[in-house]
Image (cartoon, rainbow, N blue to C red; front, side):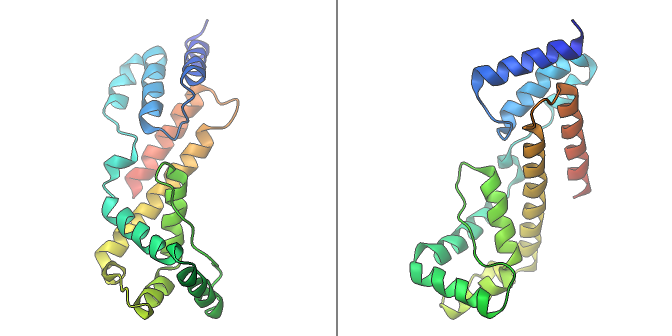
Length: 186
């Protein structure tokens, strides 16, 4: 049996046994380490030094503020209704803002992108409601928000690609390597 076939078998067995998605950074890393051990032992050390989980990004200062903003808008029906009306009044192409579920990385990316796309309208709305968000006027925080939007978009793209059916381990390896190169560009 070739190393590639054996690796595919080992990873398939691991996925079936644990029922974990590739959105779990530590599980993905564990699979990559197993693959590297079977296919290219000399490259295993490179994977051991990589961290593939969102806690490493240190974007909590962005996520906390964005969650606060979304909760302020969505928690009360009147606020939500008024915000949607403001978006329609301004003829904005975006019509609403979604909640983030803490356990879902994909929803985090969508929520961050949603706030990024509507940040000016959100700032206006919050000021009108007497709940100004100073971070929305802070250029450094806005830059951090933009970075978080970009990183989560790349992570979501990788997650979707890794879940494709019929993907071999060496293809997953190439996807992760391409992802890491994209991150270096940020």
